[in-house]
Image (cartoon, rainbow, N blue to C red; front, top):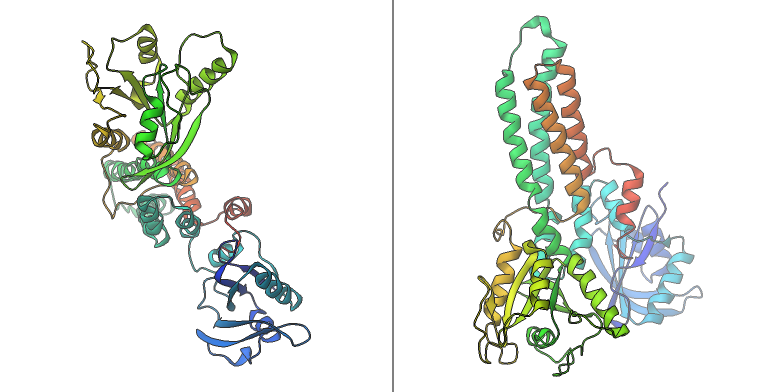
Length: 446
């Protein structure tokens, strides 16, 4: 029999109210042992006012107790939820009473794991629970909410349906060759598979946007000393985060700060000015700046518009990855240099000029496929992306097999392999190791 588990489901710390969930076959019995009322007689989805009682009958706290009988609960099991005062000591004492009454402490993600195992949600939806909790922007929350509601699962299920239909046609030709059945010609099968591959590739292409919506992006400010990197960081943040002086090499280490705009989340990174120097501490800062240049999702290469480009500027311009770099002319409030870089954004970090144009340029560079609509289904997790990529690969091999007019058994094998990869996304024939890996990353109480 499955064990009965319990945990606090509200965030750590103190607050006005805390929630404690008990789930499992003995949840009702455990609730009856610790509550002042006859929990075993309560109807499902009813709330009751009473007290949590200690082993000697003393009152621990005044609470609301909610009963949810299987299968109409989050986990699909009998559940009791207790809403108590949010003090650390009160929560601890109530949990101790629950454990003494027959439950054990829930492991991270165990409630959601049980919801998946009991058919309350598929694996993609279960993974979305943690994504909803961890969302750092409105776009990320919207994408996670769509996955939780089953939008991704429906998309994957539609791919599976089409693949199953293809496999049925091919297998019929294998099992009943003498019947002369022909539901589709090889040419039609190839055409239909190409259409399916195109639809799967469209979903696959959303991973770029989906990944940075969930994880946020690193936005690195790079440039020679005294071009205004720290001033731009302060301007974008709207506060004095970095020290700004006229002395070259003021910033000697990496500074990081969270930044939000356009409903997106960024990790804004200020780096040491890159130049030739014999000073050991500054050299280490420059080494870290170059390392960040390679690791960052997006680079703002800052150039000083009040003077001509230096050798250091030109060397950096040649070194930065062009596909993820935006050139920024700073200090445009001072006398302008005679040269310009085509496509560079002109700003003044000190006067706060041009910041809106810079933000628009950042958004334009990020959205490779253009801003997606509210109903767009996104891939946000590497596990899903890799499984879909493998499924596409198997479909492409199936196309090649059909075009070579090879034995139908080979085509059937590839189609089944593609179905298996899609099944991994929503939890069909998924292994215990995969489940353990996924749910161990959940927060306690989910």
